[in-house]
Image 1 (cartoon, helix red, strand yellow):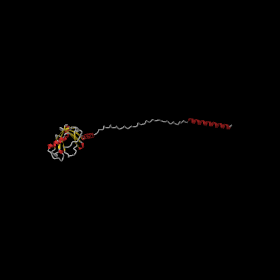
Image 2: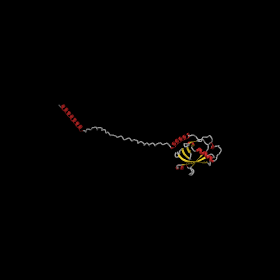
Image 3: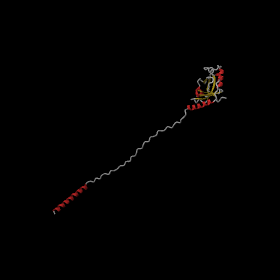
Image 4: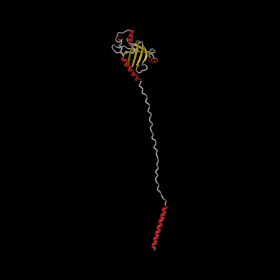
Length: 211
């Protein structure tokens, strides 16, 4: 009987201990591990800066220089001049011929020049001399204002030249051109014509006004 009682005590003691242990465990606070929260932040991409294209300058219209236009015109007029029959230079006033008086020299020059077209300086100047003292400045390289201008001319003896040379005094009919060209104080401008040797080409051709 004593051993049964002892076992009973032990059993009761164990139950008491277990109960106390369970009570202490129930009295402890319960810790719940925090759940990780994912925070999604939307990031807006920064706008890309686009380069502003540099303005393209409008191309300026190309223009042919006046010199090129004039040169083409000169080539055409020179070819037209050379296509005209060449005039024979008067043998009476060629270099080496017996000298004549001034009036005879002017007669020969007048008969030769009136109705002629002459080009000089490689074709950079072309003029046409018609009967009656009327001339046309057919062409001059680099001076389009003179191209086609009308002028009056007169032949005179050349006091500073040889016996068989002559001077042409000419005056433009347009006052502006006259003022540009005049170099003798209002008397017009002068061009000297020198004789050639017998058999040499004169570069004088028939003018379009030649009868």
